[in-house]
Amino acid sequence: MPGVVTDQMDRPLRDLRISLTDRCNFRCGYCMPKALFGANHAFMPRAALLTFEEIARIAGVFTALGVRKLRLTGGEPLIRRDIDVLVGMLARVPDIEDISLTTNASLLTLDKARALKQAGLNRITVSLDGMDDATFQAMNDVGFPVAKVLEGIDNAEQAGLAPIKINMVVQRGVNDHDIVAMAEHFRGTPHIVRFIEYMDVGNSNGWRLDEVVPSREVVERISAHWPIEPAAPNYRGEVAARYRYTDGGGEIGMISSVTQPFCGDCSRARLSAEGKLFTCLFASAGHEVRDRMRAGDSDAALYDYLAGIWTRRADRYSELRTHETKPIDTRKIEMSYIGG
Ligand code: SAM
Ligand code: SF4
Ligand code: SF4
Image (tube, rainbow, N blue to C red; front, side, top):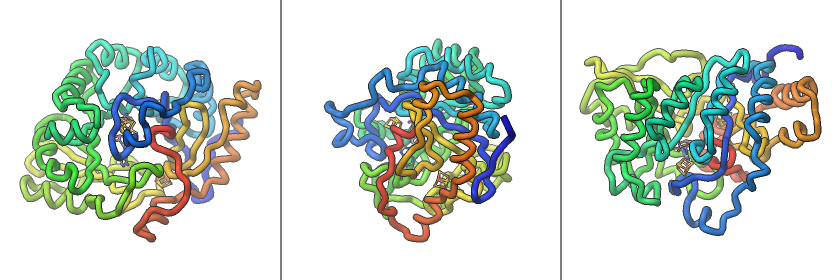
């Protein structure tokens, strides 16, 4: 198979996010609101999901295109049974340098964390939208307590997965009162809280620009308590802008997908749990990969197909949306489907 590829804007393909399931045990209003993901919602049937063998095989083909980093996500990836077995299979794929996982930590027992670490998981990101229990329970809409997520974070730390990244989606009037408490809780630990601007992913969360708290404001609110200064990115295309406390209290990050979009450096593709490839989080259609594998395509044929998709790619939704300052009216795929 020939070598690595770049797209229409000269962006390489480095990072593949793999959704393991569209199911989740939470109903975060900004992602899977109960009104749309209720008891009658039709999730993907089991047979539609990529098997572990299919995931490991396609990951290998993606390395030929340039992918070096894998992130397992969903839905809630820990719902998928024996996920540590998959991590072990991916860790054996040549040229994969980094395997990470994004989870709500509700199922992250110490045993699970240890099994993941032992199988080769390099890093973990835990989503936690605040320290205020009543607010968090209302946000996940299944009454899941903050203390249990903190327990999951401790388990990951004990298993040797620290430093842990902690994602907080900030929504004005919902949890923005909790920004400083969140920063305070993790100050002085190796963990890195990343404040995420609430995005207009999918069509179901009723997104409004006035609910977005710009990262600039988050920085101001935190620096009123503890001075912070920008830090250089770890690598080109890093999604979070880094800041460090000037007193040595550690690091935080800002993910400003709405106010300062980063499409110019976007080297990420997403594979849905049923094996469709999306070249942008805001895409309205995916490219069928699973059926080609199941129809018997060779690795070389899959490479050619995927290389063709990536070389034609010209996505830059967030940059276009920022010019419009409102959601662009296309039918988008839900984040729980495509993988966050
Ligand atoms: N269930 C796992 C979790 O919550 O960590 C993984 C999947 S979730 C879709 C991945 C990340 O996307 C989470 O950190 C979540 O907070 C974030 N997310 C979901 N909807 C979002 C939105 N509308 N705006 C910004 N971030 C969002
Ligand atoms: Fe589930 Fe994660 Fe979406 Fe919340 S953000 S509903 S935990 S997939
Ligand atoms: Fe990448 Fe699309 Fe997000 Fe831009 S909007 S950073 S192209 S995923």
